[in-house]
Image (cartoon, rainbow, N blue to C red; front, side):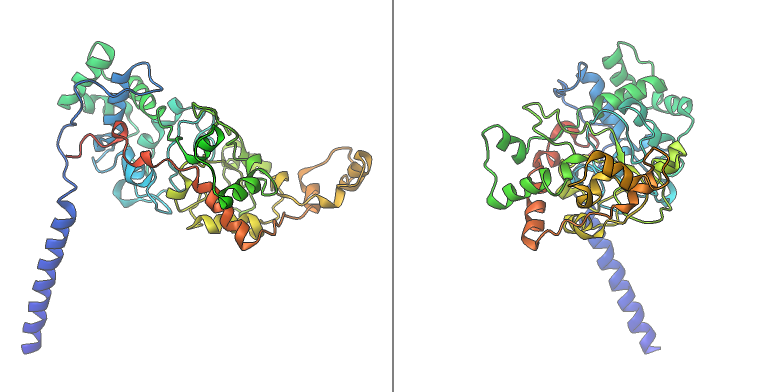
Length: 382
């Protein structure tokens, strides 16, 4: 009996401590029922209608866009985490988890999602809302009706459009208008290209590797973006980077149903990459060091492996005719994908110093304003 009394007292104390701790943790995370917005809208650089971008900002953070009011776009794309969530897989409606990692947001042109299934930002923004795992609001007519009953939306849409009508087209346009402004590219690398901050010796070596023997720039296009930063994010191709020999997630192959696309994924933008761990479409790598080591020594020789990741040193001194004769083993006159497997996966052979240098260079692509720019902050947070 005495033991039970002590145990009960301990349990009560633990409950009190945990309750106080929760209260302390949540005291800075208070939210209002309606958004707090500036009297004059923020200047959104990529927008012709700042009021419409403001509507998109509110929609982005509003959990009303999910079927049970528990998930918003910002649940998986958090400003405090460079607009990702630092989880291997994100948690959606009813604690369901996504099958792929949530990357940070950047307003790139071209194909979207890891499998390239969306062709534009406008095509992208409604898909998570309708997705049965993420927000599960597949009836967009019902969503528009729901939002029209929320007091602050009629005024917001009226300011943006001149009337307070709300439908799925306007919801899509507003979200896209907001998202197309995500361009956090004021970074050290960009400044160094235009006479600003000089790279350190390690960063400079990493840059040389990135554009040289590392072959990184063959897929990640970050060549001199110019003052506007618009050189980033235009990678519109998918690649198999040799993560596996057998893929349960077939990437873009699931969309095209083409066996030669198996294991291919869209190439993500590297801006703020140091903040967006874990990495790859399945979040398998926890650190940039692990990512670099994959390319250094861990690439698998899958039949669809990108040619840039193969060691072709064996044919460097051959003529074109000799190369064709060497590769065309079935004498068909064409070089098939499987015939390229004669070239092994490349091994970069980077030293520990060079690997560190490459990581140091990747960190020069960071723009810390991603965490503090009020134009992209949560308007519901007090």
